Length: 366
Image 1 (cartoon, rainbow, N blue to C red):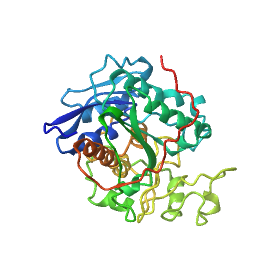
Image 2 (image 1 turned 30 degrees about the horizontal axis):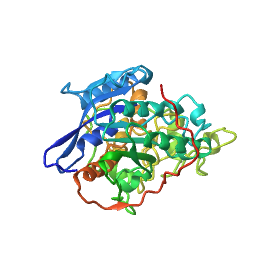
Image 3 (image 1 turned 135 degrees about the horizontal axis):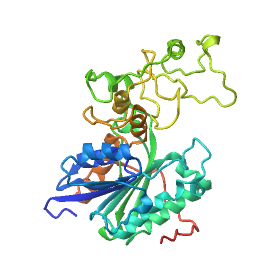
């Protein structure tokens, strides 16, 4: 595929979030291939401001704040690479897992529409592990079939990535689907893990190097006296159900006991999954100090650089960080895509999610 001339793929992104996937993509390169972001869309206003301020300071690209249903894909800037981490609420293992019957399940179809409109050379899609089992597995089969048959046809490689095996200091597992246009005759392979067996710990990620005191999004949230006292009795790696907590400080909760409630980080292990949802008790807690992490510390665990400034209220920033794709993971996967185009060999592992042909009915898009 390497024709000897520089090739800059023009990247468009749906459901962009604050820009983690695009940041990793624009940092990736291989041979003559690199990527520039030309257009992005998200329904959240603060998220769009964050994306624009960090990735489009030169105004070469466009970030549109509007519902995906209002986007006309044949009228947006020309792109030859597409990214979409379609909303995962209805595919998550936490909750009712409504799949296609939920509000968010059908949103992946806008990725298919975008592919149909401009037929990019390749695409990358990301979602939670619960996608595999939604609708008894039918949702995953349907999505893979529709992506394979989109545009002029794509070779699709789905894989369940454990991001802690790719340098991310966090046990974050996600399904990533890479598709390359069939007519190009490429053979994308899943890149080999880089930190398998020796993951980066939460403490090292946060403290080495130390976060500057004046770093953006680094304000410490004041804990109530009761919460601070409760945390003081929870050991590193423990949660709200630890036996060390005195009776008067224990939570009065019946039924399921979620493991991440007031869960403190273990300094010697990767963090547990950073999320963008949830209320009090789910903000990720320091292993030593009796407090929740700052947003900058959370961003470190998501591999965002310290000069990446998130815009909005403290809670809005927390949500943006938790919903983002870790840039480091995105860069490694996308760099493998670029190496595939450039004909550069790299170490790889077998894909662990096979595209099984079923008697599924393709989604009809209008």
